Amino acid sequence: MLRSVLAIPDVYELFGQAIGVPAFRRVFSSEYIRPKRTERILDIGCGPGSMVPYLEGAEYVGFDMSASYIAAARKRFGDRATFVCERVSKQTLDAPGAYDVVVASAILHHLDDAEVTKLFELAAQALKPGGRLVTLDCAYVPEQTKLARWIVSMDRGQHVRPPDGYAAFARRVFRDVKVDVRHDLLRIPYTHIFLECTNPIESS
Image (cartoon, rainbow, N blue to C red; front, side):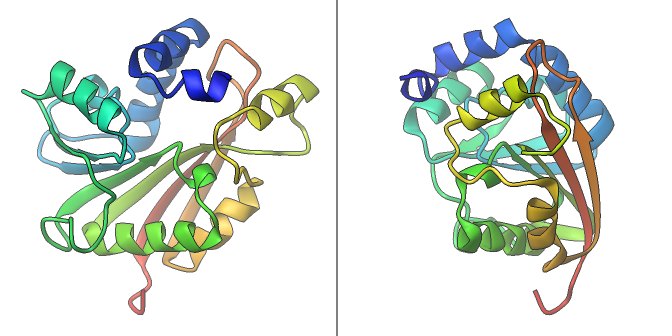
C-alpha cells in the first residue's frame, strides 16, 4: 500500500518532508554532488525534480519514466531545468560526453543486475573527461539496527544490496569508486550508501 501511495508526487514530497528529506538533499548536494554553476548535470530517474533547488544554477537535465513525476517537475521547475519523460539510453542522450556530473539517486536498488550494469555504462558514456557519477541508494549493512533494516526492506525497490554489491558493479566500468555509508541523514533509522565514480575504463 505504502509503495503505491508514494508513487503519487504530492504524497512522495509530503512523506519526504516528514522524515527530513529536505535537509538530506542539502547534504547530498553539498557533500556529494558538489555542483558548480558552469556544469551540466544529468539526473537519471529525477522523479518530480526535487533536487533542482539544491543545484544552484547548474544546467540540469532530468529523465524519468513516470509521466506524473515529469508533469509535476515541469510544473514546479520547468523554467529552471529540462525534463524528459523517457528511459535514458544512448538514443535519448543529446550527445556522448556532454555532462560534468551524472546523478542516479535512489535508482540502483530498483534495477536488476543487468540493468545496473547498463546504467553504469551509460553514465560513463554521458560524462565529459574528468566527470563524475554520483549514486545514492539504501543498503543492508551488518551494523544497522533492526528497525533501519525493516524500513529499508519496505522500500519500493526490490534489489537492495550491501555496499560491496553496489560497488562491484561500479568497478566493472569505473577505475575509481569511493564508497560512503551513512546512518545519520533522516529523522528515521535508515542506511544510505553513496558512490562517487570517476575515470571510466576505456573498454566500457
